[in-house]
Length: 215
Image (cartoon, rainbow, N blue to C red; front, side):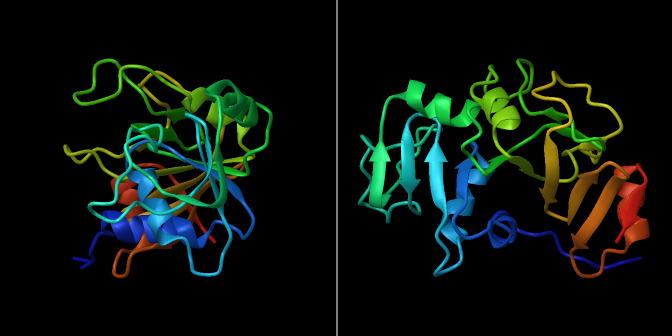
């Protein structure tokens, strides 16, 4: 039996941050994706966008220095880097829909092997009961990345042949970052980019239940 350890939420956020290129304009979705802001590599300029109307967010504020007039779309207090700005959310959505974002990082309930995204539900406990700006981001950003646990609490794969949750967008997801492995959605199928130490491709494929191509 293989021995491996899952990535923690911060380790997963660090893994996503590693792949964001210098100079990119990036939207971080509500939930786990917001942690990516705390792990941007030193010396790399990444311009973070929030759909409620912020451009140039920094990492989370230190405890005690929160300003609740400066929050992201998930109502979390944020910091603003030098040169950052805030503006009307209609302008923010114009940025999203106009193809001005290089990457968006979203959470998900399910992603299909062909890159279909399902990240909202009215029936999931604790879920936001509306799609919000995710549809605009998923089709407007040049690349959509998903950050999620690979398995549900019941042990079912969140990467599926076909989504059973309401679809946010079709064929939009390029990369899937999970606590066990990183995947690419390609025309050839689901490709393995990397996995945690000790987890073999065969064991991973057994978990996912879908064919996985190994580069």
